[in-house]
Amino acid sequence: MQSVVARSMLALSGMAAIFGAILAFASRIFAVHRDPRVEKIAEILPGANCGACGYPGCQGFAEALVKGEVGEGAYCPPGGPDVMAKVAEILGVAAGEVVPMVAVVHCNGGRSNAVERLEYDGIEDCRAAILVGGSPKACIFGCLGLGTCSAVCPFDAVTLDDDRVVHIDREKCTGCGKCVEACPVNIIELVPMDMRVHVKCSSHDKGKRAKEVCKVACIGCQLCAKKCPHDAIHMEDDLAVIDYAKCQNCGVCAAVCPTGAIVDDVKARPKASIGSDCVGSGKCKEVCPVKAISGEPGERHEVDRGKCIGCGLCIEVCPTKSIRIVGALGHQKAKV
Amino acid sequence: MDLGQLLAIVIGAVFVSNFVLMRFLGLCPFVGVSKDSDSALGMGMAVIFVMTMASLVTWFVYNYILVPLEITYLRTIAFILVIATLVQFVEMVIEKTSPALHKSLGIYLPLITTNCAVLGVAVVNVETFMVTGLPRNASFIYTVLHGFSAGLGFTLALVLMAAIRERLELGAVPKSMRGIAITFITAGLMAMAFQGFSGLKIG
Image 1: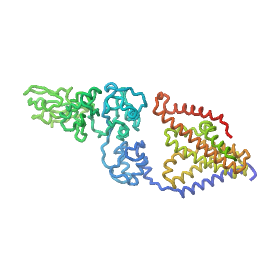
Image 2: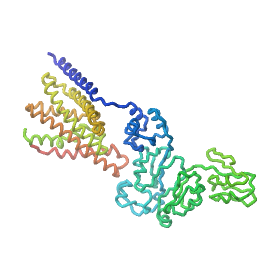
Image 3: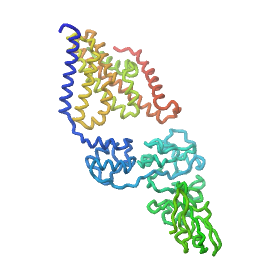
Image 4: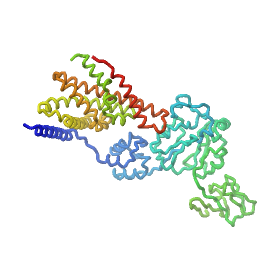
């Protein structure tokens, strides 16, 4: 080994060969058996690591799925049914049907509507504010408006507007429930995706106090509970609560609510229309929860399209079946 | 080889010539893995381990392969070879023997494979302990100790940075400065603060 070049080449290639051999040998000895299905499933999962499935991240969920640790309730809320169907295909089992959920904030009290009892100047985090001196708002039940839910949302679905009211983008929300967990006042709830009418208030204060501290509070007047045609709304400690199992999205409650605490999310509703064969029985007028129908007995009645919410109650009581529901999104219900 | 000398090496590597804040090596993980203290600590532990092992192995490679063959000019490429192999090997062993440790440490190991701070330790070791004519046993102990302390210094810088960034997350940082911009400024201020150690007289 005379020349430097020869020595260098020999030494380096020798080292490389030895190290390569060691690694090759080690990969045999220390080989860890991995199920290829884990990788496949992990690829399909959204990869947001939100933890909504109850496992530590998507990788953890994939491993648990392959090991068979997950029972019937296995579901990935961000991925939805599509992803679960693909996962089920890999695992060779049938996927269950799950209704997609979406988060709803039960408070609409922004800066302009809710009275603030102090000026909070600390860390911009609801949990921190609660630790320091409770909610900066006079209403202890309501949203603090500091955006903790917005910060924890892995999908950018939660935003605060200029009035510090929380808005949830139904398209982006996957129902993972991170915001529900993070909210220190527990006013965020996961509801089925098809529910569009919500009580946007969580105040259990008595009517007078509730009205004093927030313009859009539920004052416990019980009008909604009385008017609900489906018995889906009930009072719980001076607060209207919608039973989502019974709610039909008719929007009667939102129409009668005097403070606007109940919000109807449906953009365009169909309207009732009375045909020329109306005999003026007046039954529709009686049953209409929003007083949208007028007319003298015996004459053809008319619907105030501004007031009508398309709940369809009048259709059922009309003796001559002359009422139809028309309009909204090309939707047309024939005479029932 | 007295105790004062050893202490001087430790303090020197941790504070006076901290690998991140004074030598400006390993800046990629310093910015990348300093978002929260837990992963910063995990990364730090992995770096301490790898730096110590790398110092040990490169000492043997240098003294028993490169020096006898008179090819010490190849030390950079030889050390890269050693470190990359070492990290891969360590990852395999950890994954097999301790899955829990692998879960907390393993994700950082590939990051270290090509970390310049690890190579920096090996090169600095050669320059300060091996070509200076120290006796073999002293140079060996100094080398390993220096590798360990360098990792300690890296961990210190990383954990400090992570703690500051966690506070910054909640602070009222101007919008245009949020994220990586304020991190760079913070890193600069920290480096300036560590400059204060350079006047420290040890030994």
